[in-house]
Image: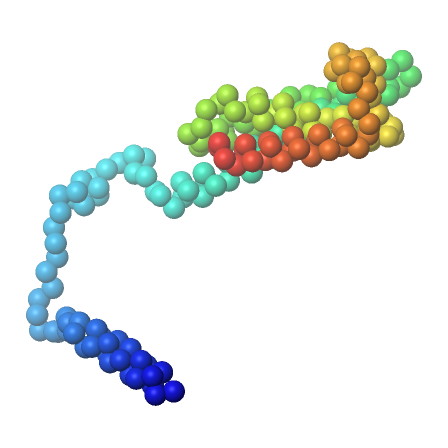
Length: 195
């Protein structure tokens, strides 16, 4: 117990000695305030406001870019899948359903133009956008298409080349959903790391 008391005493003395040895500048109200003039500051004030870099606003915009890209990719792919499903369900039987499907497809195409203002604020390459779009299409398109048509989520059709290629592999339902999850995790990491 004596050793512990001696150690605590030495620590306390050492801490107080460090605190006391520091010199603090006191404020004198009668001393005139001296401003340091730097030419960099004056040229900063002379800049055109459009040339100035507002760090806080720019970082907020930069942080929102991956979210915006993800939103545009998911919503465009979802609209495309719903449009394809409605168009395919209305073929030959219901002209109104086909027109609704075409309207969803047109909305999906129009939504792709939202990439332009988002990527204007980004310093990343535009080449990441098609890769991100293709990955989200792989993950979401078939599931949304099948759900819109009332089919099982893991159903594989036989009309497109993609469906024929998937049928040749004949993956079980759980394996396809597992692959979708893996690609989804990959595309989220890619989006937030590269943009």
